[in-house]
Length: 236
Image: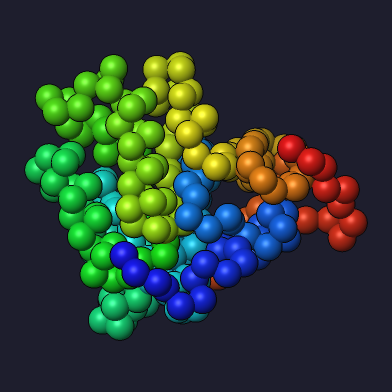
């Protein structure tokens, strides 16, 4: 795909306040990270913020939206002040949707990544992507297909990818945790009658990271993680 100026140095900063501090500066470049959470925890907002931040800092990105339409994504982004249409016109961001077949969807993703010189890719979501094509991609093939997909994203596309998933989508055998470099989990708990949201870095290879649950909020400005001023960082 060619050299991307400045893209391979250091870490891929997420643009999520608080998260980069927990990851020694950001995500490891050319790696894949799984983002798991239940409905309403802010998974899509998290990823839109990641892509928008990259686009505004010379790192073009792609969102493969399997379930939501382009119009829905554009409207949702506008609530946080993110102008997707403007970024698309500047060729800093692309929002693509699924094709009639899984293989065609992946081909379009690769082609768009080459054209854009994409540094960041988000797939929303893996369960929807795989289960949408029951005649082409059987459940028994999900593991090998997921492994190949991660390889395409990080090696063929040379991108730092976030893959959105849900609890239990792989029928109780969470093979998807073993392939990516990291696993982030978003949890929602009722505490004294108030719904509180927490982020857990379940796994992040090659990174010293916190093992605590960290409170976060999704406001009109996006996703923010709260971390204590002094925090002991533990080796995974």
